[in-house]
Structures are given as C-alpha cells and as structure tokens.
Image (cartoon, rainbow, N blue to C red; front, side):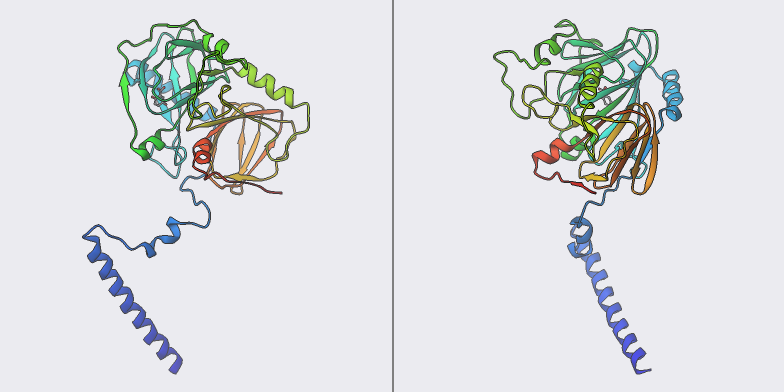
Length: 356
Ligand code: GTQ
C-alpha cells in the first residue's frame, strides 16, 4: 500500500512537471522558439535514420504508363515529359532520396524537348528505344541504350527524337539538393533546338581519350567536358577487369570520372558501373550515400533491410543511406548507379562499412 502511494505521488509530481513544460513550450512557441531537448535524439542520431525507404520500380510495370503519358501531353507542352520516381515514404517531395531526384523521360518520334538551362545538374541513362539525341552546349550526342550522358549545371540542353520509336531514359538530378540550398536558377533558350556549334563526337574526341587540349584548365569542382560515356566503352572496361577475381563487396565496380581531374563527372552526383559475375553473392555493405541502381544487363536481387528486391533489365531500385545491401547475380549482371557521394566527400561526411 505504502509503495503504491509513493508511486502515485511520484506520478502526480511527474504530471505536474509535464504540464508546466507543456505550458512553457506553448508560451515560447509564440516567439517561434522550441526546446532542443525534445528533439535532440532525432537531430543528432547515433547513425543515419533516413526518411527514405528501399524501393524497386519494375520497368515492365511502369513502361505502359510512361507510354500513356505520351498520349496525354506532348514533350513541347510538358517541356520535359517525365514520370518522377518518388520514394514511397516521401511522396509529394519529387525525391527518390533526400538529395536526389529520378524520373523516366519519354520522347516520341519527331518530338523536341525544348532548350533550357538550370543550375541543377542532370544525368541520363538511356533505357529503351533508339534514335533520340541530347544536345549539350551546342553539341548533339546520339542516345544509345546504357549510355551515361550528363548535362552539368547551367549548360544549355535540349532533347529530340529523329528515329521511329519512342525513347525512354532515366533522369537523375540534384533537384532536392538545390531546393535545400535555395540555389535554383533556370532559363529558356531562344529557340527550341540549339544550333550545332560542333560536330557530334567532338567532346569525346577532345576530352575522352586520356588526352586533353594542351591549354585546358579545370578546377577540381568543374564538371567534365566529356558529356557522354558510351555504354560500349563502359562494358569493354568492365569485361576487361572481370577476367580477374571479383571484390567481395562490389564485384567489379568502377567509378565514372572527369578524365581531366579524376573527380566525379559533376560535382554533386557520382556515378558507377559494376559487373557481377554469374552466381556472385556480395558481402553486406553500407554507406552514407543513398544510391539509385539501374540493371542494364542480367538479373539478380538486392537484399536491403532484410527484404529481397528481384531485378532484371531496366529495373530501378534505391538503397537509402546506411542500409545494408547484399547483391546477388543469377546471371552475369551489369548495374549502373548514382548517388550524392561527391558532395558528402567534399564535406568530409561520407562513410562506408564493409561487413563480413
Ligand atoms: O531534361 O532538362 O527529369 O530539367 C527534370 C528536370 C529532366 C531535363 C527532368 C529537367 C530535365
């Protein structure tokens, strides 16, 4: 009896304190103040607690809806006809991770997505169809499946389709990052399509063969002038290194670089290509850069947060920060991926953990 009375006395003392605090919080709220101690654990977590969740988009499930968008609006009217891949736990945010945006862009035969430029950096990974091009600062490049194409911050770009089939690619942009920094600018071009200032292939010839113009000067954060990384070359590199033993965590994984500096192609987004031999099972791995993966060839599965996500060609999946990833390949598999790693590294924040 004595014990429970003491307990209830303690309880009512606690309740009184709670009430006083609640009244205090309410009063200071009028001055736009709020107590740190109520939120400190969430603000300064022991390890990353991403609001993003793992997710996979099967291309076969969404392709028809992308095509349906093509019957509802023209590329010109939409400016960019894109279905945004939204992280299921962050709907309404136009984000696939906290810092990055991804979308599927469709361009139909004869269409033009008009020239514009913005401070957001963009990458394209060509998935489906042939005959489209992207023009970047006066040079066109034909888009072939698996090609990794970039439009760095503030470069003019337009897209067009000169072929006879619909073309779909994955867009990856740093839109949420620029929104976070309130650093977004954009403008429209004076014409829908840019005048060609240089012949197709010029940038790749000039900057993409382990040679650069003799007077080229680039700061470490400058984007590469190589704006297309043809899949044929990426595949040749991956198959070349796949003759040696695979890394236990990555298989055979390469990082796309600005060949003039060794830095990432663009300062805000890092990109990677990896080959997993048939039957490969990776050891678990995690890193602080939430990563978007695209399967270009083969099939397998990604185990993230204890769940298995089976993937095949053109399927896209996202692995949030600090989530353990285990990759399995049922056939020889090629994955493309991108993340905000260069930003985190520039700020000294990036961490990884290779588990056994
Ligand atoms: O192609 O310029 O998915 O400006 C989103 C914004 C693509 C583009 C997107 C863009 C673009």
